[in-house]
Length: 293
Image 1 (cartoon, rainbow, N blue to C red):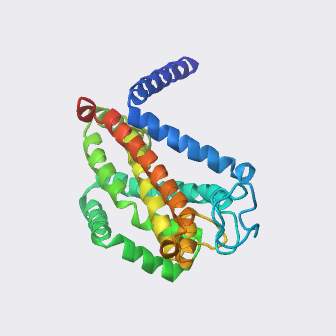
Image 2 (cartoon, rainbow, N blue to C red):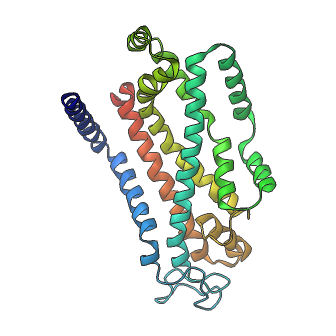
Image 3 (spheres, rainbow, N blue to C red):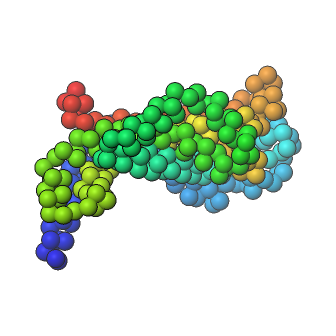
């Protein structure tokens, strides 16, 4: 057993090195990873980097940028730089949590539907088609209005409405994998359906799931910003979407308070761009036809 474990570790290390060699050759992939690591570090060190308490009234309302407040203050005199830095943690956690929940839901549905087929496949795919056809943003507003304001409710709504693409992709891959010789061999030696799904099929689908998860994070971050901008976020948590909501309430666009609008907008754009670049590079690595282009 120890010999097999050592062989598996060497194979895993070799695969990781090959993956990094391919990934590091993509400039877009390296750029996206650098952006994501920057925001992750910013979120982890937010309490240390923020110059003020994000909820403390430390200046005059709607004060323009200065040495004391590099991004100015909001309509209640709170430091916008501190709120932007702390908001990184909220927006990133919401994006990752909602994406993880959506990917898990979609993966389970796709695996079950593709492997068992028949009536179960038909029912699950028709449900998926219904969710695909429904207008996402209006439905999000309805669900959040019913469930109430709050970060957890926003995460739940995004996950409930964001699993369809993963389910379709995983089902398609499962339909192909279940006909492969290694699955037939596992079935011949007495492996059960759950064992085949968990041990033989799911590990081969994980790379595609991971690549799809990166773009799901983008959708989750943008959805949270949209819902918070409309006032459905948690006012106790200064996410980037809530910063834009307060900017709208203060009439920042009409009054020219650019420091209230531009920084959170740029932060949302850059984080979404980082995950999009990573997704593009992962698609190239996992899809040989794209890699040759």
